[in-house]
Length: 208
Length: 208
DNA sequence: AAGAAATGAATGAACGTTCACTCCCGTAGC
DNA sequence: GCTACGGGAGTGAACGTTCATTCATTTCTT
Image (cartoon, rainbow over all chains, first blue to last red; front, side):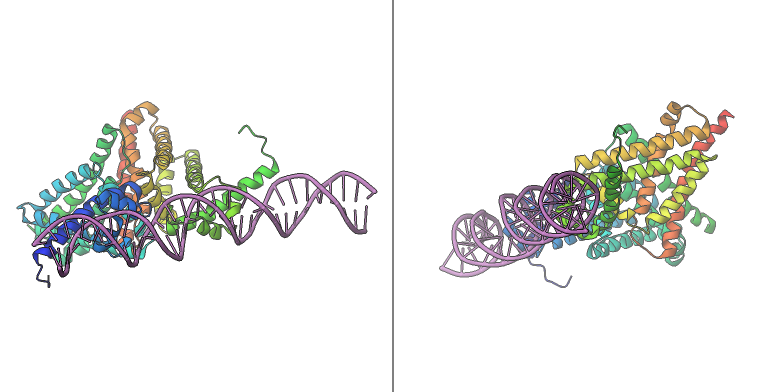
């Protein structure tokens, strides 16, 4: 942070934070293309014109929304890393995320990001950055848990990390279904994730 | 089929088939909302106005596109069921699909369907129908392989089928990445699918 | 009063859809 | 053999609407 961050700036930042939270719902309901500026304005409770005081364009809103999600994800990982058993904390976090994402709008946003990342280079860049950040964080957790050097962890378990990301994303993007069917499916997904993490944990035992 | 299906009707059907194939690319490139009728017309090589001689509206095009995909999927399953070892044939089919979908536009279309199914009820209905059809087909394959009654198969392995569908979808929706990373990830996904199918196969051994 | 915050009507472009029209080809009348 | 004609195939300009964006204006805050 290079700026002095006056109280005014902080208030503006908080405002942007709030607006993004409101806007997220509108985007989830209608999609990035489908939601008009009117929709976003209505959702955020401000006028259309006022939007352009906070964001230079509609696509900038989307960019910041994704960046905001990335920051939050980093915060989660920071929490995980402070835990005495990071792998366990990770498991709990993941399990909670899968349950949670299906209830709030996050799954729809992820689906939207995934779809538009495949055709809009700018969003693809943001999505790649997010995946890279998450897998890098996972590498940190793995390294911490196993005591192995980061380079070796990366070489051996990068794909495991990518797979976990894929599974969490896919789980959150699920269409709503009957509770028992959803629970059974979630269980299978979590089982696979556990397997991946178990493979990582096993790598550390060999060292011990 | 109740209609006599004159030669003219057949030609029109073929025309629609061709148009859908062209339109699929345009939708993949710009998304369902992002692709304008002008874009679709250009992709199909016909005028905008002429489109409305074949489809009553833009959303009808999307509906028929999905219906067309479902029909093709059913054809694949019919092929699998004629094999002497359906489970093996299924494995090969799935493996091929995962490799293939990432190369052609199918992954982007799936992502688009997934995203818009979460917010447009009509598309959600079509997507549900597709998932139901695929899992039903998988149940048939499982029943054929294990010799167990369909009801028991469904009770025990419905979630396995849903999980396989989820994995194949997620695999095809992957953002492009380095070949070795992609292959490693695909291997993990296929490993999980193999596990699911192995669980099904094990059910039949208990009977023998 | 001064400046920041917020408004919503105005703007031109682009949207999905329609429609009056041309083109083409097989056939009937002469 | 030539012409007139019916109708399906195809066109692209025009329609009303909605879009993202701008800006002159008003409302808050201090």
